[in-house]
Image (spheres, rainbow, N blue to C red):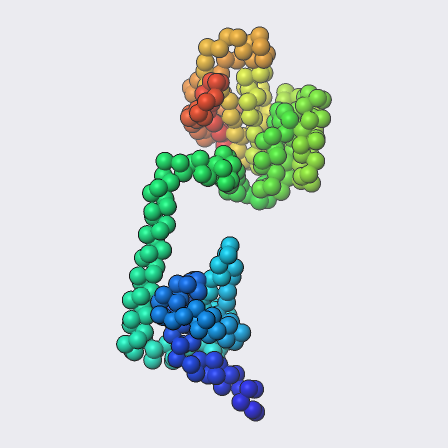
Length: 312
């Protein structure tokens, strides 16, 4: 076997240069830019870049682009057994040399400076941090992300789905959504909004007789629905019927309020619900466990405060 055909000798050829070995030790457990590596090793960029290319070509390091920078790290998890054993021996010898100790001291300083820059940014941005994140990611990204806690195999019923806004938010995180509403106009709007989701089925039907089989869903949602119906307990009983044993009914609605004008303006039957009332209704339809949480009002909104209640 010639020298190039021997994997150990090929690896020795790469590690034979002390600077490349020092570079690898600095990159062991760290991801650093070329500039940071120059600072740690006190070498010009052309020298560091040349050795990095050899290490990347030899499979010892890998690079990734982040913006205008290239960041480098040791490919520890990808080393073949011969390379991993060789690195263990070389690393043990390197750690005993004075030059490496100085590299490690400068590395600690570089990492401390990086943390200081990050801390300074957050310190300067604290007052505007929410606005910065909203501008970058939208105002509800954190709430949408929480939907990832849903079981991806879950089947969800959105009862009184309206234009499909809730179903649209939930659909990417579960296996199936059944959206139900009695209004043909609402369902037409929901159909347009939900057309991109292959796992959403829109059904026309009343909440007093939900067109879903017994125990067919894992979660039933009633979002701003109960204040519109004459008999909330009947609707809750139907919701409980369609969830499997151990399933959950989640209600989002208004806390009790005195906006009498809502009856004429929007056809509200109930001026919200007290915590005691909603607990009584959930227990009355057979839920052994209930929880009711008052939701803080969003800044600038004009409507009554909301609550979230669940029965299971």
